[in-house]
Length: 401
Image (tube, rainbow, N blue to C red):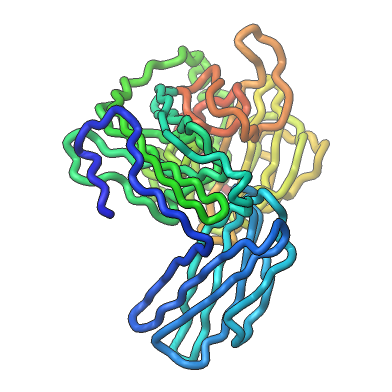
């Protein structure tokens, strides 16, 4: 059913409610087609049924994971020509993502479904949906508020007033278990839609809620204007010989605060060749080294002025406890193993709160989406004393003799 959200419905509306004991879903690519059915036999047993068309001699593999955990899929049965599989490893009350992979001489096709393993007698029906919404800096924070529900999953769509289309529901904007969404957006007038589907035990219940919302222009939190003023003459640029000037670190996904899904970029990225030396911006001591992103590592240095710098996506050439002087080698840039790009990801922290008390704790804090003292409020997933590092681009570059 095509849904039209152009009408400003301010109350929740039940769109569709279907009762199935078997949940069938189908995927098709060209002539190839595969479907997947899931049926609860008992609390610990699910029967998975695959069907196909468009080719002969299909083999099927079944994978599963618990939705919302972020874990990888587990193969629960490897490829076989048998289309029916009785899985005895299910747990009562869990919400599963299940995939069937179909392979034939004509090619591959996969099919996906979500199934809440709950007996019908224990289901708490979803009977309505509202939403709470407010601004957080330059982001909109939307929380779905269901009435009832057992295994509810949620999705968010939005469009600026005057636009024809909502953002798509796809792999980068999928349904999720959490009812909370934080989306960095430009200020302006929006139409916000929340979708909720209860997947419990094959009883598929959908509700949608709509609300117009105005995201106001964000205000500065009063970052210390002297932070960079006093350091431009005393700190140096972290890349020896500089970076690739064809890639501006203040635009696009490399800039500080750029949207990254539901979060915001907490640093600035300087694109540079593999092997480029990363050097200490000022005197300090190495306090941490760890795996960082896609096969790279990060080095944390606490400087003598109390600030903390995270040099990320590098191969470290120091050890924890190493005292470094300005210009000393910290590490070298290496390509990440995801897309092969090579860069320095730079983050800076003041090291003190607004009462001038020393701040401690890990720099990455996935639970912190709202409290930032010195930068515009976005969901950086970092410690509250984060500083905007953009002005580091103007620091003096140290060149090899």
